[in-house]
Image 1 (cartoon, rainbow, N blue to C red):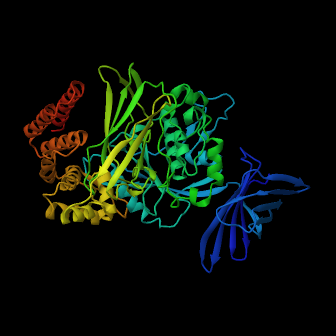
Image 2: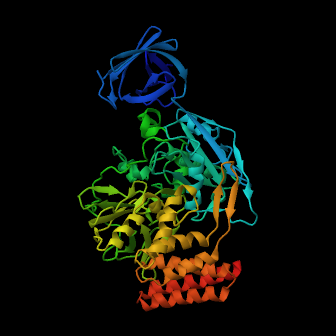
Image 3: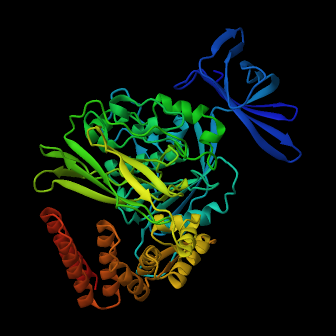
Length: 637
């Protein structure tokens, strides 16, 4: 048994060597990371992996050798490792390192876990408490234990509890609040890659999600995740099992693991598993989408482990591709091929992408996605928004370069309610802001863009939309130029993605939006600044302090009403955004104590869309939505 982690040194060069040729689930590989030491500092210099080494035993000595793939131009690609009684030599890139055994684990990671007061974090699950695959070993499995089986020593620091300042607070988190908590926490992490990850255990997300991975678009990449206890809490074996899977799944994203059906979007692309990835028995698949058999089929066959290809990445991926705080998740801003229509499509579903005729330079680009049945009634899931990752959007820029839209926050949806598309409900619609994401602004120059969407249906079918033309107009006046500068700042893009924020890290962006309203309030694009400021004011805002206390700023309905009233009058908003704005305006009126006025806003919303000539089916849904909103506001009041 020679597999494990070895430490080596040759002068000013240090080697972390991973030998993986025997033991539990060996991948048959040797890999390593190289660092340069100078005084009291250490700098990463490169990585390598040997995918199919030859292994030879000679008495009490083992020799492993083969040709390596390097991240740098090596003097030689030949790698030779000789081990005897826990020590030996490693010949890598023309240097010879004296190596000694360090750990049976291939990588070591520190997990810092904080939970909001009143939330009970997951502890462990007995894998034999429910039926599973025959031959699967029964064990009491913790989150650290699941990662240990993958070859990672996950050391859990002392769990922290975050007190809540304020009573009667709504402890449902939105993306803006999570973004602020992330920036507050990651400020202590530093900008360098490190084997350190943060997990926030919160109560619930406003979208009902089970988990989220923070993939911030600066130096802080993949350094943390959050899980939402209300969606998975409970003491039954089924609930404990769901908690374990959610924790391991979200941390898997921090190791740069994509969802099972998205591996082909990685850089470099990876082959998909059975059923276009939906047949993977992995922590990274969604149980309800497993093929064949859905959730019952998944749990009947899942051995509580990663797939072989995922193990290779976890144990032997290049340092910057795995370490937290290093390379971005998945594809980054790398160029991709535009989505192509399937050669054959018998899904019975049609996907369409719509945008208004043209956008001003700097205007937030919002598109409407429409999924409909192309004939016979069809059932699928309702996760059409690209933030949930069953839908991807590609953007072909005026230069001809095609990039993938990547939202700031990755929402994991482990529950997929079935949507039936038929004559009574012929289509579902979503509105998505795709102007900014983790790669910054995607529409930074005037010209013509071609945007396509790809939707993964419940049965694994890949539905691709025709190209949608998005025109960005050239600025005409001096005000147009200045407004574009105010709109295209990086912090402003984040505020549009988050629909506003109190975070001090976005102070410059908020000041720019204030300037938009104060100096250019009559410009057509000022409506977007008002919308962001109004939506953020209308809701409460949770802030995680440096001392890890949760402080809650109450809603400011007066400010919300002032801004959103102006927004609701603007004819340029798309219908779905206008619908959301008017419902939030009604909530602000109710919170101000004027319930009759709130109901008037809902009646005005119905009248507004009726005047637009909305089709009768959608109009019926809007009327129902207005009545439900009135009832909810009356109950809250």
